Amino acid sequence: AVVLDRKTKVVVATCQSRLDPHRFAYGCWLLGWWYNLAWLNPELNNNGVAMLGVLRGTVELANAPGLEPYPALYSRERDFDRYVEAEDPDKLGWKTTSITRPKLIEDLYTRLVDGPFICYDEKLVSELKTFRRDKRGKPGHTSGQHDDLVFGLALAVQADLACPTNSRVSILPDQAGAPARSGQPDDDEEDENRLLNPSVLEGGAEGDEWEERFNKDEG
Image 1 (cartoon, rainbow, N blue to C red):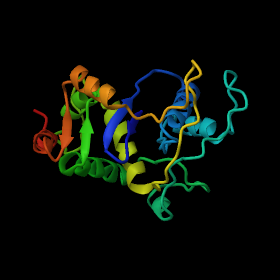
Image 2 (cartoon, one colour):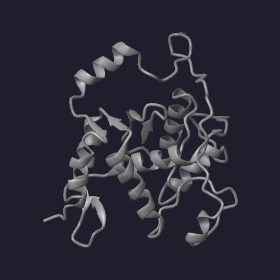
Image 3 (cartoon, one colour):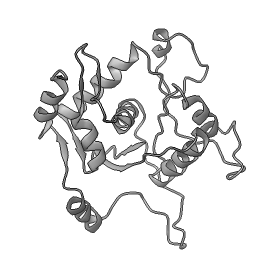
Image 4 (cartoon, rainbow, N blue to C red):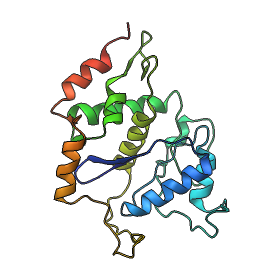
């Protein structure tokens, strides 16, 4: 999962785990509320349908009974399902197919090369630097590498492109009883992040380097 600040286009959080789909969905539910009721864009392929059940409130979790449906889920455009095999009445979540995958990648490519985009997360930067086209021209991770965060970012970009930009306020308080946080780091935290995360990728500034890596065939 990747959290993208829609105003600054900065990646403010990432999450990698091996949780089962229901627990991961609950984690995303909490993460979304923490970051100002962020739009969530679950990919429906593989375990995504199970995640969507939790997010819609149709699956009840033993460790979180009475969990309310998450109110800000990405919804596909009206004609989107013309290009996939089946239609869902609510059109929630992203469906990756041989036709929609190029859009997912090309929109990410445009954001990375043209900006605005800033990332201080070393793991995501590392994955982006090893994400390139193979000999058949298909984008993906190189041998021995991963691209989970790359596709998490691509889904976040789709939500950023398509979802409304309504202002929201988080209602989750700190465990110690402090007021609810906005999810945005203050100036001191931001400076600290710059020091702790020296690997920075800025679209428009270092985009040419990423473009060269992306278009280079794997040897």
